[in-house]
Image 1 (spheres, rainbow, N blue to C red):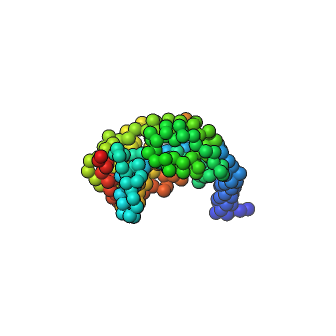
Image 2 (cartoon, rainbow, N blue to C red; image 1 turned 30 degrees about the vertical axis):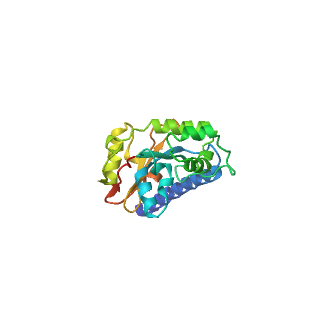
Image 3 (cartoon, rainbow, N blue to C red; image 1 turned 120 degrees about the vertical axis):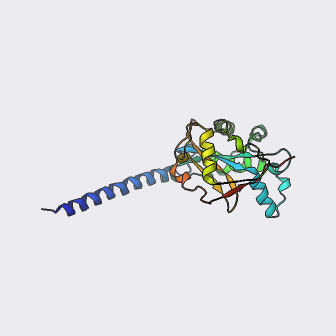
Length: 230
């Protein structure tokens, strides 16, 4: 007869084998649908902190004033994109070449993404994976943005803010019922807040997303540059 210790070892091995099998099945399923338009699990609404973008561009010596984000009216959080996502990984460039965007669609999208170049890039890389036509994709982006409330402290700070990633996450959770830390990630570079990523279902409710949340900023302190003034 097998000893109790050996029985436990056999059970543990069986559980481990079952777990690996499930992982393999999931990976195979995702591999089969990789980059197939419309076949994804949820969206990520990516919001960028525009003042950080402009500060970084200025430091690189780029002509940031040529970018609509960094000239004209001031911007705080802007939509960077609406990204179809798998529970592990994400699709990209699902149609090459991508269907072209009508000028009227670009004009409408400028209301939340103040950069024509970014609009085209987001459509090519992410929008083509949504399974939606261009007008429907950007309408979905509008709905996703409308479902998120920006915390009052971050609407238009006139002075730079020094914050922790946890503080930023807590403010978004407080401002958005149904949002949890497990449904978002605060993103940064070496010193500044880059933006916030919020995971949402296809019906635009918040969705837990371990893979996205695991890529959150781990700096102790980050700076939110002030909103540019006209």
